[in-house]
Amino acid sequence: MGRIYIVSGFYGSGKTEFCVNLAMKLAQTYSQPVTIADLDVINPYFRSREKEAQLAAYGIRIMGNALNNNTGQDLPAVSYAFTSNIVRGENVILDLAGGEAGIKLLAYCYNAIAASPAPIEFLCVVNAFRPETSTAGKMAGFVNQINAMSKLTVTGLVNNGHMLHDTTAKHILASQQAAQQAADMLGAIPLRYTMLRRDIYEDIADEIVSDEALVFDKLAMREDWQ
Image 1 (spheres, one colour):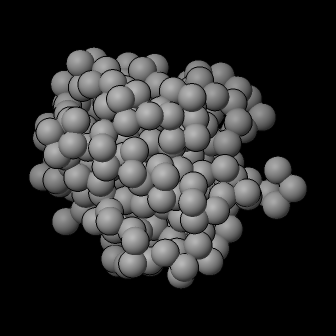
Image 2 (cartoon, helix red, strand yellow):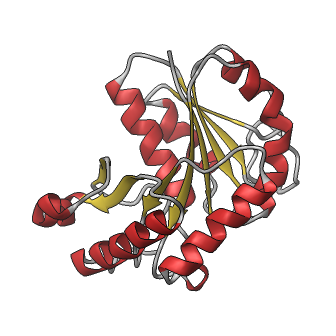
């Protein structure tokens, strides 16, 4: 049995980076199909569909674009063919558009989610180095906005406190502290994941308090020069 991962977050939080790395971890850990539903029709940059060829090597399928994932045609055209994967109980990651806008497209998935035997994780990616989620109060406020707009409730936070290639252990731990405080404000929902580069993880592994660490060697959605 797979799992449905619904992933929200503000623009620039690293939401898509998290989705891609989560998909690769699932594909490497379980012998089950993994699908990323690319539902970001707002931001024309850094979308999971751009990495379709690389992810195919892991057995990961990108769905959601009604134009056959054509990145040269930037139209808000979404195909919901992936909902059949949800109903079958496969591993499906819904990469929503940033902010509140992403919740609107989620509405079209409710019936499939309700019919699926798979458990649901509704995750909110937070980064203390983005102005919209720079404090625990702002993080908690954003989650409350998502809960108010959605028929579903956020079940966990993802700490992705990053400054792109300049990220240090201090960034990860400072964002973790804010995320923990936000989780407490929200009624002690869990801090489910921390996303961090391998060299940083090796230095502070014993200080990571999330349920899981999602460790990567290099950013999937950005080139070294970006």
